[in-house]
Length: 214
Image 1 (cartoon, one colour):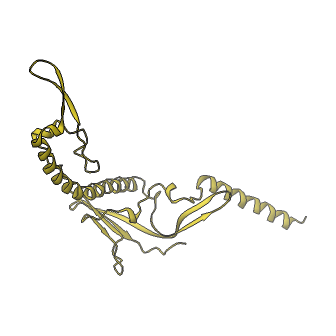
Image 2 (cartoon, one colour; image 1 turned 90 degrees about the horizontal axis):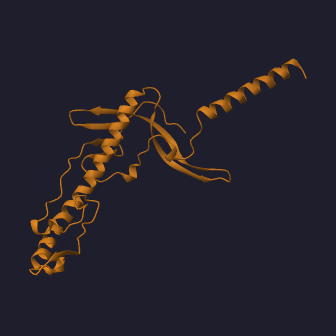
Image 3 (tube, rainbow, N blue to C red; image 1 turned 90 degrees about the vertical axis):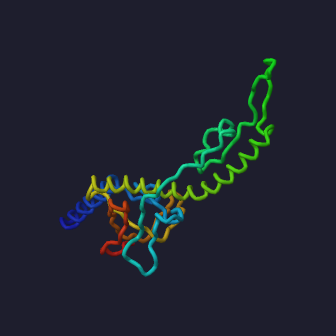
């Protein structure tokens, strides 16, 4: 073997070592959910605090402002003690206690059912209608608020770890099942930057001048 061939072989070994070392330090991510932070555009709630990019407008990708949260309508006094915990949560259905135990004038234990009182039943019906209308409006607001908090945490992390994290917008999913592994990841990546307006308060994901990567 000539000295030239030996040199090429050694050089190839060095490149193979560097490639293996890089794979270990920076493994190729084949599943989008394995990324450090993921936000699917398709899961965003329909709410005034969420503004999506519109075709023809490249000034921003996404804007997220802080939603104002409201509380559930207070239940009437006659039914409040009959409601199970969780009625304040718009994502949970209100549930009633079906019966309670009490004592009559002789001291005997008796079972009192919720529907025994027509006044209670009517009060619950009227309150439920009001609460259902509130919950319908409140759910997307709370979903938006959670996204705002997630983006806020991301913004602080990007500021704290400047240079280590890259924000990209992915488009076009490659879903490829292989015998030894699987790929489910965006094909096209476009770098974006995140800015914050504390007066609004509002976060904005904006396009950068960097080209699209395949």
